[in-house]
Image (cartoon, rainbow, N blue to C red; front, side):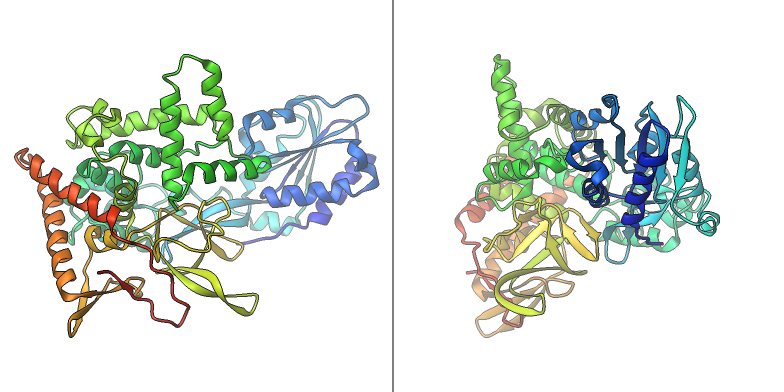
Length: 551
């Protein structure tokens, strides 16, 4: 159940503790960053806390480690330390001079909507075990006091324990693991045996999603693609990206992208958003791709590691606001994924994945191909871009609007595509969406070339011929409709069929090496087409014709 925090009450209670309570630090639990900043602002407006007379310290998981360390500092004589924190201070961090705990009784919790395929970050009531845990933060090293800002009836209605993660996260990876351990058992039946088993509908939706991306067939058996994806220790959609990266010979940049979607390479904190945004703009250039930003950041860092001069390596981190610890973690993940690709039988040696001169990286410098492979792996995660949007009750013809199959979305402020007035394509691909404050945000996205949509997406396509023109439409809510000459479509269809044949052949067990040269020529042709075919078709206004002409 969603809840809201009475921020004025929180600030007043903290002021009361400061005026009337015994000496000692105060720890206040709040749901999120906005609540923390709002309470901090309210406190600093009070005469008691003006002019920095007391230490008011925010604590949030997005802050840098250095910024988080300040909460352990003892305040000067005569000043009180007040820590405004999320549930990171519940178990992850122990501050030994806390005497007073203020518990607002709520937290941010991520839940997954199987219908819209969107993760929702909701403010919810905590459980009774959380209440106990928070109360225990007071007086761990001396007597303490806890102030719970909710009525006893609310406490009694709280769940005993938090909702298990298995009940509020996507289940695709779990279903794939179930298929490895029990290939002949239906996923619903297998997962019904686990502790805190998920709802049947959620499992069925996960199975449907895996069938949609080609990992499971209609009988729920792992496909040849699914057997390769099952070897990869990441989300199945990202696993599909890595499988395709090996087949299209552009592994290294997509290893970096997959790892960065697990761990952010940037030294990201609430205080340096502007610096990170500028760094992303510099790295992204005209790519219109958050994923190429990730790849360029990581591969640039790998390159400067060859330098003996430590100052040069540190300058690179500073210039792009990158986290050295985060990049080392990402480097470990890329090595792990390389081993996974070897286990999947897609490369001969894991080291070849990270060697730029290897066959598997023949086209790693081809940005359009890298973006096309991302599209093929992440499809049907697609955004339609249209010119013309209604904002604050007014139609603005030059504004851009964005829509997925599930409905309208917004580009998150952390994306390089935020605020763009024109894109080189009418479509963007994305990995995940998150709902917050009633809006659905896309954190990272990448421009999708129309030819990549027509050639690399493994889905049913409908055709409607009208004289010497043909309209091509994709399944779903008509996010993709293209109009071409019949002759052009026949050529593209032949190329699409050849690419699909190449993929199916290479995904079969014990695939022959006799086609390496032939496959290389086909991939080179695809690269040439993507690089030399105009993808810029200005988005049409809402209500206008949304076709893309490709000739």
